Length: 258
Image (cartoon, rainbow, N blue to C red; front, side, top):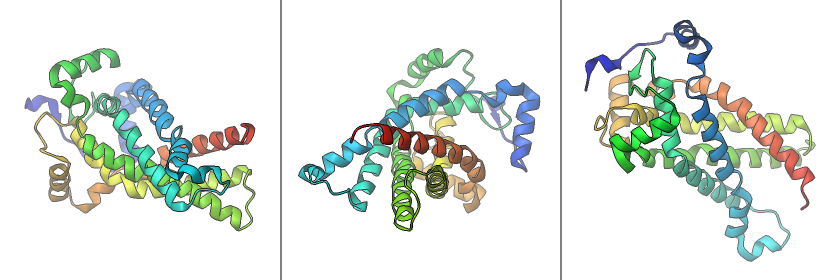
C-alpha cells in the first residue's frame, strides 16, 4: 500500500473537521460526493419506503383485506425487509460516496478518483470487479436491518402511541416529534455498523478480511467509544432528513385515496 496515500489525523472537535475542510477546499469540499449522496437517498428511500406498504400487504396475505390495521410484528418485519433490500440495492453507490467524501481529506485511505461518479464507477469495476460493487455487502445488509428498519418501526409505533394519548394524527408537531425520536433510535442502533462499514468501503483491497475483522481491529486499536464516532453529526444529518421524509409521506397519504 502506498504510504503517501494513507493519512491519519485526529479531529478533536466536530467543528474542527468542518473548519479544516472549508479552509482547504471551501464549500466544494463540504459538498464532496453530493451527487452520489442524492442518488443514494433517492434510490434507497424508493425501495425502503416505497415497498413498505406492499410488503406489509404481502406478509398479511388475506388479512390485508380484513380492514384491520397491521400488527406491530407485521410492521417490524416489513421495515426490516425493506431496509435490507434498500441496503443491497444501493451498495455500489455507497462505496463510491464514501470514497469521494474521504478523497482529499486529512484522514483515511485516498483512492484518488480524478473524474466524476460515472467514470469512478467504471474504474471501480475495472480495478475490483463485481466484488468492488458489493464490498461490505454483509455489513450493509446488517445496516439495513438495524437502521432503516428501526426508523420505520420506531416512527410507526411512536405515532400510534402518540395518537392513543390524544395527539392529532395529522398535526405537523406529531410528525416532527416522532420523526426526531425515530432518528435518535436509528442512530443508536446503526452508528457502530456505519463506522465499521465506512472503514471497509474506504480501505485498500485486502485490508480487512471481513466485517468482523474490521470491528475487531476498531475495538482493539481505538476502544469501544470508536463505534459511536460521529453519532451526534449522524443525528444532525438524519433528524432533518426524517422530518422531511415522514412529513411529506404523511401528506401524500392524506391526499391519496384509501
